[in-house]
Length: 387
Image (cartoon, rainbow, N blue to C red; front, side, top):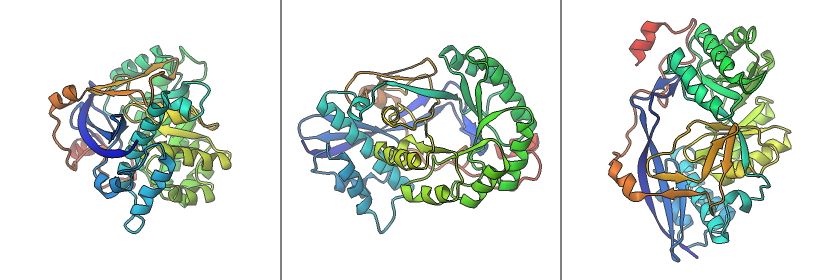
C-alpha cells in the first residue's frame, strides 16, 4: 500500500450559538471544519481533521510511501522543513497527515485506532467545555444542563475579563453539575489574556469562593518564568500546552516547573500527543487533550497511562461527518469501526459551499490590542467597541 494523493475538504460545524473567549467572539454560529483525505493505490483512504494549508510543504515526505510506517513518516515530515521551521500552519499540516496515516494503519489492520494503539478501555473520561463567553447567564445554565444530562461532573468556562462576572458564572455551573457530583471540578480558561500579576490577582479573588481545579493559559504560552510565578502564588493548578507545536516548546516549561496539567492540541496529530504524553509521564504530570471536531486524539488518550480528562466542546457532529463515538457518562465512548471511525459524506459537504477561510479581523483567534494590559476589569463600553 502506497500514499498516492490527497483531497482537502472544508465543511462547517453549526453550534447553534456564538462561541468565543476573552480575545473575541466568532461572528456567526457556524465555524469552519477542515478535512483531509489521504488516498492510496489500493483504494483505502485515511481521514484527518484540522487546518492544513501548508500541506504541499510536507506531502512529498509521505507520497509514495507505505502509510503504516506512521512514526517514521512523521519524523520525515519534520525533517523536510527543519531549515524553515515546522511551527504554525506547517505543524497543522503535519498533524492532519499524521491523523490520516494512523487512520489508514488501523483500517489496514481492520480495527479501531484505540485498539491499534494498545488501549484496554474505549471510554475516555472528559470535561464539558462550551466556548461560552458570549452566552448570558440563562443560556450558560441551559448549555451545561445538556452536559449534565450526559453525565459530566466537571466543566471549563471561558473568562478573564471581569472577576465578578466569572465568579457568578462558575457558581451557576457548579450548581448545575451538583446533580452528578458533590464536588464538581471547575476550570477557567483565560486564553493568554493576562500578565502574571493580573493572573495572580484575578485567580486569588476567585479562590476565596471557588475551589478551581486549574487555570488555563493565564499568561503567554511560551512564558515559562511567568507561568512558574503564577503557579507559585496560587493553589490552583496551571494548565497550558494546547498551542505548543513540538516537544522542544514544552522543554522550557517543564524545566521551569511551570505547568501542572500538560495540554495538547488535537489538531497537532496522534504522534505528537503520544510523545508529549510520554514526556509528561516522565515528569509525573498528567496530560489533557484540548478538543477539536471528531476528537481524533481520544483514541490515543485511551492508550496512555497519564491521561487526566479530555475536553468535550460539542455534542453534535460537523456537517457531512459521521463519527463512531458517543458522548455519554461524562466522557467519550469510542466505537468499533476501523480507524478513527470518521465517515465523510463529500456530497453533503460540497452542498455546504463553504468559502475558503480568510484571516479574521475579530474573534477569538485575533489577539486584542489591550490583552495583558488591563488594570481593571473590561467595561461594557470597551466590549462593545472591541466587538
